[in-house]
Amino acid sequence: MLAALLATTLFALSSVTAKRSVNLLGSTHANLVRIALATLVLGLWAHLFGGGWGGSSWGWFVVSGLIGFGICDTAIFLALPRLGAQLTSLMVQCLAAPIGALVEWLWLGTRLSSHHLAAGALILGGVAVALVPNKSGQTRLHSGWVGFALGALAAAGQAIGAILSRHGQLLAHERGESLDALTVAYQRIVAGLAFTCVWWIWARRHRIGAPPPGPLAVRPAVPWVVLNALSGPSLGVAAYQWALQLQPSGIVLAIAALTPLAVIPLAWWIDGERPTARSVSGGILAVGGAVWLALH
Image 1 (cartoon, rainbow, N blue to C red):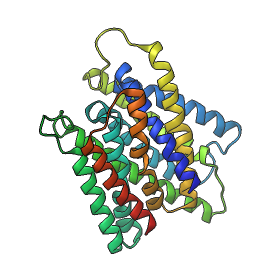
Image 2 (cartoon, rainbow, N blue to C red):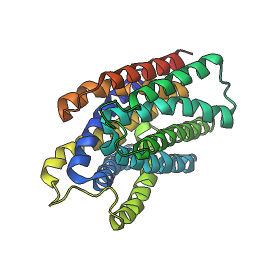
Image 3 (cartoon, rainbow, N blue to C red):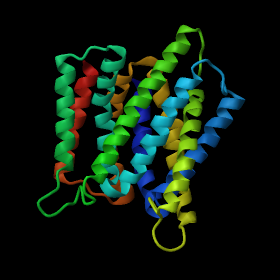
């Protein structure tokens, strides 16, 4: 439980600092720089103190990282300027819980009880309430359904990546292997970095996620990128992997769904992103559903 709560706090900080990084560098540059920095930090640990590329489950971790770091994080950084830190976090963390439970049911045969189904419905309802535009205008989905689709894609990527990672850890445990959480995070993030590099080249050519007009604001962005790299893909993911070693992925994803509530005061304080009554109400409903899912 402690590991999952630590990951939740770090993910909240990562979401807010990522939004600030995107505002300064654009989503494509900000995502690449923070993943490269996180890979360096995790790689130093893994090769100096951890297991490096050891273990028989590294293939599972690579596929998990390709989905969880590559596809998921790219979608998150594209969704941030459209939905903001609060709603992006709400969609990713809360929708990942029912998606994770559904995938485990389809793949691993984990049974879904009536509590699971009711909690999943409450989560979906809460997210829908938070995303519905106000009468004054399209304030939440001002970019049409693009932001919603990106948030849903990121949630699915996070859920599937977590399940694949946990499956790899269970296989390693059955073989008597022991890998620390930072090493697992490193083996995952390398694949994510490769995907992000390919995406960066393609996105630059098509001006997707481009930075604001004018020279890049590199110096003001440095502290936000560093905080984002450490709180999210480095220490945050390490705490997340630690939690997955101790609890089923559905439970860990449900606890991580508390992240949107932690994001609200941080986004208000750091980025001036004031929450609306509707987004707070929807967030409370969605997080309540996630907590219900965790308790059952």
